[in-house]
Length: 180
Image 1 (tube, rainbow, N blue to C red):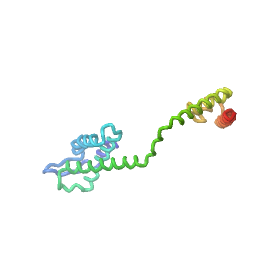
Image 2: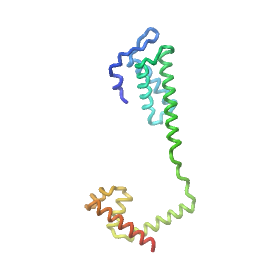
Image 3: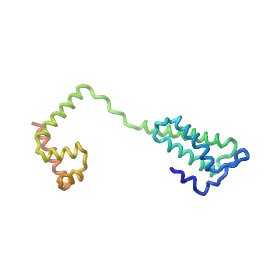
Image 4: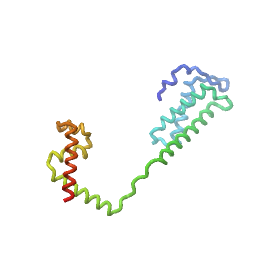
């Protein structure tokens, strides 16, 4: 969200404060640093989206001012501070809601599982060494380099269908070699 929202027709909206009238631009210029400080302090400056939160707060303040939700019972600073506090809490709740639904990390492998995985890798490496070079190369590009079938086809000057056929055939050969 850029500052373009502040250049629209409501810039001349006035907020009365102690016999002084402030434009929306003046409010933004005066309170944006305060809001930024409060958000960074609450969320931490290492939080990558703190600036988005600040922008959302400023936009929210302007919308509320436009709708006439600021009655003047308190200072404009208190009004903005209250909105800032509520939006920070909303942001934290949203982030914690996302974290609650995040998958649990995989548990550490038992020592015997690590040994089994290493043994499987060795068996697979030896099986791959027994393949013809054209099958080794296609497996290397597709699985190790993580190229798409189209990219592998371009590199090898063959069709994507041919890439699929070679990958499938190489997998069948590996399966046979490992079973022996």
